[in-house]
Structures are given as C-alpha cells and as structure tokens.
Length: 284
Ligand code: SAM
Image (cartoon, rainbow, N blue to C red; front, side, top):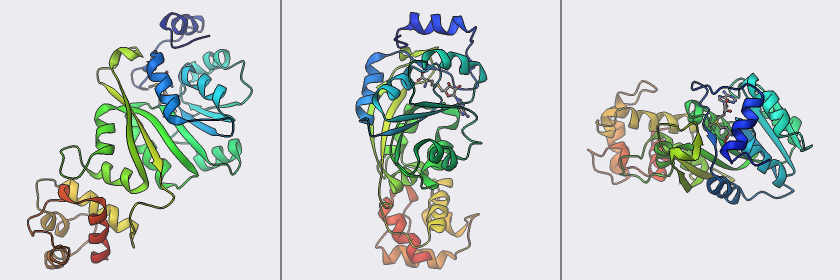
C-alpha cells in the first residue's frame, strides 16, 4: 500500500465512504518527495518513539511505524478510524487514539504509550490549531526532543524569523526561546489532496535542554513579549507602560532601555530574544 499515490489513497477512502472535512483542516499529503524530506528531518530509528497529531488516512503514520520503535497517533475524525484500521493493520507498534488533541492529557497518553522515554513529534498539522498545539507541547515541558511539522508557510517563516524583519513576532520569540528552529522544505498546494489555498512548509524544531536565554520570571518575559508585539506601531516604552498584563511606569521602562543602551524610541520588533530576556530581568 502506498498512500502517497493519489489513486491508492482515493481507493482506500472510497472503500470507507469517507469525505473530506474542510473545517478539520483535512489536506492529505500525496507527495513522496515531501514525505521523504519529513522522514529524513525527523531522523527516526528503531529506538525512537513518535507522536503524530492528525494521522488522516495514515500515509505518514505508516512511515513512522516502519521507522520507529513505537508511534502514537491522535485523530479527531471518527470517520477516519476504520480507514486507519485498514491502513495500519500490518503494524503492531502503533497506538491510535480517537480524540481531539486539545482535550487530551498529553502527559498521560504519551506516558501510557512511551513510558518515560523521550519522543519526537512528526505531523502534518491541522492548520487551525497549529500554534496552540506547538505552544502546549513546548510549555508543558514534556520530554519532546524534536518536532518536525508541516505548517502554513507564513507560520513557518514566523517561527524562524530574525529580529527586525516583518515576520518577527511573539511566535518567533516563543519558539526560539524553547527550540532551535530550521526550515526543512516548502510544499506547494499540489502536494495535498484536496489542495489547500495556501502554501505550506515543513519546519523542524529541536527542543533545547534549557531555554535559549536565562529568564528570572518566565510569566513576565512572555507578557513583555506579547505587549511589545500586540502594539507593533508603538514604541516599546509606550507599549509596555500601557500593557494590559502588568503595570510598570514609563520611567522604569526608559531606565531599563538606557541601561541596555537601546534608543528610547526603539520598537519591540528590533529586540532579540536575549534582549527581551535582559529587559524582563531588569523590569522584574
Ligand atoms: N497526516 C495526514 C496526512 O499528512 O496526510 C493528515 C493531515 S491533515 C492536514 C490534518 C489531520 O488532523 C486530519 O486527519 C484531521 O482530521 C486531523 N485533526 C484536525 N483537528 C484535530 C484535532 N483537534 N485533534 C486531532 N486531530 C485533528
């Protein structure tokens, strides 16, 4: 069975009377080249455990099962469970959970499947929940080693963006705080069935053993980042002194900026992750 061949995928789906749901972000991968780039980047071996969110018809899941010790797949759509029953029948190292990933206790289900072993995440994510899933996985500090994920191209560009670019924002800082992100490849709409309206990219996030910078108060750090980018057109001192998340006088912000030798009219988008950390430690 090769589900990256459109005719085989179609035949499998037809056998189960399946029809695609737009609202669940169902765009199934049908490009062998992209599939093998995902697998190369994920660098699995028979000691590795893999978590897949949204297995769809099982195209990627079959490759994960064949190349890993154990794979756990979480799929929300009940109509795909019999499809996956057929496509994964030959593998005894796959656990399939029928659930909404946002409602699942990921710590519990990954512990049940993998014990205390670290695991990697490999997925062609449903775009409507890409950022909440990735942030949940990072913030919960589960033993995730890497995430190799297909996301909307713009989201991937934001994850890897450098300070001062138009893509750089709160997501860039958060992802670069927890991980070392890199772009793996682009995937044009014709790589999927049905074709999405937007281009996609595969991004690999290597989770750092410790966050990239030392932050004394993580909550304040992220509140500062959110405030800085929530009001992009404002200077940083205005954005922070009017933050809805905390209260700090403009004078104190100005003093901190001076201490860091930053110009008083500086905007948040100019600050590196290190500078956001330094600023939040000064404002603590
Ligand atoms: N992995 C398959 C592939 O690459 O062909 C399918 C990828 S498709 C972009 C996204 C998949 O995520 C769909 O199977 C969809 O039903 C599933 N999905 C959407 N929302 C979900 C959720 N909240 N929890 C779990 N799965 C979800």
